[in-house]
Length: 129
Image (cartoon, rainbow, N blue to C red; front, top):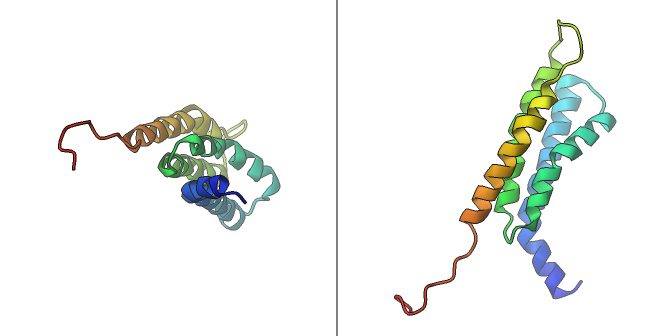
């Protein structure tokens, strides 16, 4: 591996760990608490985790971590709604909330943290050491 790729991977390793943690938590919730299969569930999880994966483009991994935990909260809520026995007619639509509200909130939180953590250049001539 060349040094540039190694540096890129080192900066974003926390974000990659957060995404894998999100997959693991959602998979464990679905498998152990809901008793469902994982193959169809991973496709939904991959769609939800695409937002934090896109946040890896920032210079630091903190927007990815924040977006992962925001979308994870929405996904865990949706999983808990899907696991409960549904009494009404039709299909359960809890993942619509994740798509309509969770993804925009995760994007906004990730961008806000990304802008807040951009390294600023020191002003020239003002209190320079």
